Image (cartoon, rainbow, N blue to C red; front, side, top):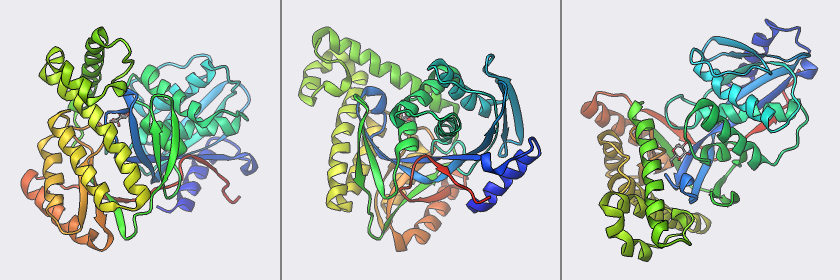
Length: 394
Ligand code: GLA
């Protein structure tokens, strides 16, 4: 659906609720993300290189007197209302908890808010690993900033959204998704140092190539369980390492040589986890250079190495993702491919020649269907503007 029709639907929804003064209407949007490279590094204070994609969540609303907040979800055909003094997690309306969590954190940080009515709609596929929940959080946060005249460092806003997801929703994610959603820029990748939260834009010009996401259509509970297990393993490894190397504050600070010396102490499994984090950080740096030089062949090879490391050392891939990556790599026009995100489902990310896209989608779709009886979904993505305020025509 084009933006104008989406905005029209949001306005209609609001009109059913309030006497809508279109002059006072505020529309915030925030993007989903694709991660080019740097997986399972964000919560180890490492390096990541995502882009914001051209799919987003819109929050349209108006400020109201009093302290009552009403939210409508067009996608879930659902509505929730709550008072600002009494924001509680409600398992009956899962989507709303992301928005409530953000409002709660803004309040805790001392922002002065009042009630509001908002309608929400998105076009980021849910459960595909393209960060629709981070986009919802960031869109709500961006709405609050505009509605209540708040001036906050965008990194701080992204961190508040992470806080909402960690503490209110109870999902233990890192910072990458919210940063990409808030700070992404058109035709730029976002290089983030997750230790000090500094960032740098890296020109993302693919010259005749595209980012193709292939959704495995696997949404498994395993993903969140294993994600938490990997985080705990990284922490356990860090604690063991600290006992001998007190100067090491995070896995980021280790070198591969130090790791070799510590392998016995860590044991095989934890050593593999640490090796992934260290090698992935190196690949992010190399990918940044490859992009700056326009060396897409090199970038493609780094994606493949990342996949092998995620599969072998971090052990977060699965037969379906391996199949999509391996069969993609056999095809003419695919420069690189890897699983993207937490693992055990979601999408693979492929760097492909533009004129080969149709054929690649066709062949991958057929092969995957034959092997697993599943129909993958395809998304061709552009590096796009992150969160913004829209000025809809009246
Ligand atoms: C999920 C989390 C991110 C990041 C990735 C793995 O998408 O939300 O913070 O940890 O997994 O790289």
